[in-house]
Image (cartoon, rainbow, N blue to C red; front, top):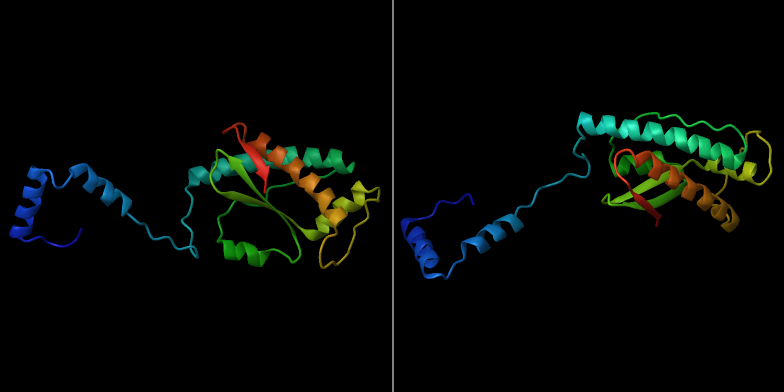
Length: 180
């Protein structure tokens, strides 16, 4: 409230409080409800260094677990390395992903919000090739979309990566991930 009240308005408010017409607890609740904070989605609030370091530790652990798991699935040595932990806007993220791409949207209870796992389409095709008995040679296939069979294979890979995600978070908090 940034406006200045006149003496008559102040007296009226005090009289309403004394007679019971106005409940002080209701006024406090109304003030708390009306607190709206502006948020600029183009420039997200930066995370503190402590959160960044914790996320770095979690995703380093995730890369080790996921690399071992993917190695056993595709029967070829696979290594994950953490490139960076940084906060970018959703628009920047969408612009940086190729089209088509494999995008797994999931949520993790008790964490709030949705998470995404993006897998490059060339890596997807290499994983499919290896899981279907192909060799380690690089696959260069440009596709408009994935077939239903390919999506079924990739969904199993994503689900196993989500189990790695749960294991990586287990040092911080127990989570339960569900693919949306």
